[in-house]
Amino acid sequence: SFAMAIVFIHWIEKRELLCRDKVEEAMYVGEKYSSRIQLDFEDYLSGVCAVPKELARLCLNSASHGRYELLEDISKFVTELYAGFRLLNLKNDKLRRKFDGIKYAVQKIEEVIYDVKVRSLMDKKDGSSMKKSTL
Image (cartoon, rainbow, N blue to C red; front, top):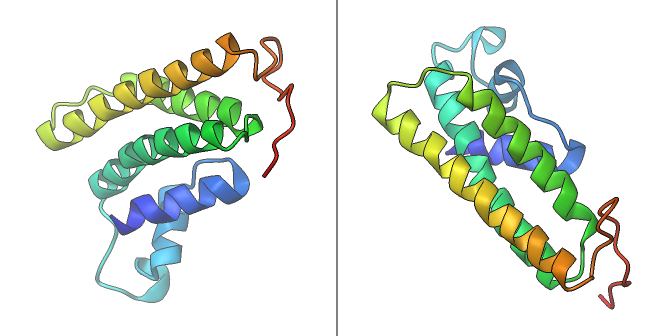
């Protein structure tokens, strides 16, 4: 979804979650633009739920390219996002399935970080890279 892309790009640039109002602003919809089209809150949450899957892919690619400093940022954000969604009582089937996808993204990210730490490519204490990237 377009909302997912906007949230993902914002996270890459600022390392923070973009609120619904700012996503609407980036999409040029909502009351500010006198638009009859608005970003439904459920669509916003659906887009946010899709971001961890993309971040898990980024985590794997970053590890394979030696960019270990990004792994801890991704892990922290996705774990906090998962904790926030766990507080919601999701009954919507579509949104519930997307929420379950966050859980699998957390697992994938943890596996990548574990593999990197086991191979001593990343400092186990602070997550910083011990070996310099050749890229």
